[in-house]
Image (tube, rainbow, N blue to C red; front, side):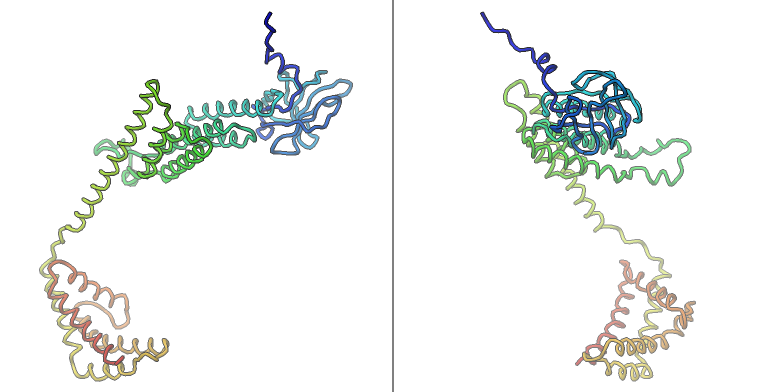
Length: 416
């Protein structure tokens, strides 16, 4: 005769609780894992929250009756009246805590309690994600990752779920540029300019997804979901090398055999697609660089060109007169390597003053009041230089170089 097998559910019901999973309470800080402290009161174990040490679950005397309470610093938040020596699963009511009352499940193994709590929180996070509340969902997954005892594969899976949530958040923040003529009525010009500009959170969320995927793979190198989600996120932000590496790991994570062939082919297609898109991006950037190099120079008004040439000629000639060259040369002779900065600045200021004493009359002829207005001086000179830098201002550029050469020769001669 064969021996009857144990019914594990019945066995679980009679074994003493090592840990209790509490979830769904209106006061969220109460939720979590409560572990046996090894201390008893009123014939039953006292359980302490695994993170918040001042939160206890224990059997207490309520007047003439007995019951179980969950509280913080002797402040009862949830409870029920019962004579049971084991923590009950149902019948809990809110006392000083916010409703609803929590669900409470006791387990003879801390590992089982952790797995149950992880399952509940992952379901809660998934429900938030379905409502497109991605940030809240990611926070619940983070809460699940704080559970102390989880198998490596399960912890990797939760990281992968969080990576998927961040990838979905990134996609929700990616704006698509509208086609011309498709703007909605009432859109103003500023809104039109914003079209096509991506929310900064798009890139950040994609990076978070990659980070979560890589953490998952540290716990379980064969986690397909983590590799896949990380590769998709990398593709969104153009991290091609990272994306190809993760896509390759996704291919390697798929078990061999015909059963998983489609999954393996999908990962392979993603790998090739990223290689193609990277090549297209390189070609596009090369074209943009080439186009910027061959940009057509704007046409210069002939009158503007004649004006710049006339001004540059006058400025150049003014600096060739003897009444300028003599004092100018004397000042430059005083400038040498041993000169302190303060004295050098003063001498350079005198040189500028000499130059503008010769140039002021020319500037006045062309409508610039430069005697006391440094901004106007720069404006006139900048206008001449702008014309020189066009494709048609070679003569103006040559005159400017001659002026600069005259000044630099003074510098070199004085330093010698």
